Length: 157
Image (cartoon, rainbow, N blue to C red; front, side, top):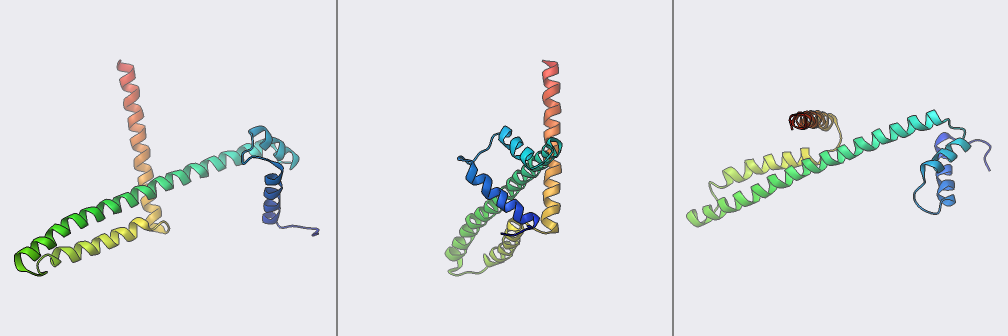
């Protein structure tokens, strides 16, 4: 046995011990408070940690929603690309018997689609973070406006 442990080792050991002690995957809030008390964690620190966890969890959900929205847009773009360019290529083949003018649409649009897909599936970096924060602000503004309109309509009715 060791006489001292690093903080991350203590965290892992305690997680394993809690997992063995609890039969189900969930703990009640009372159990959480009891465990914290046994570890010498004050109710205030536990409350602050819980608030931070909820905030992080909320942001992760928002990021998941943002990523799904971006990937959905890429899929819509790819679908439009496939439909339109299939029609153009078939028309070009029917008219000239080969590929000609349709390539002038197919290739640049394909490059744009590839760049859009690259951007849509990127989930790290400054560009992603800027786009996420912009989307988040717009979403918050929309929610605030919707709430305001709802309150005004309720007041009128």
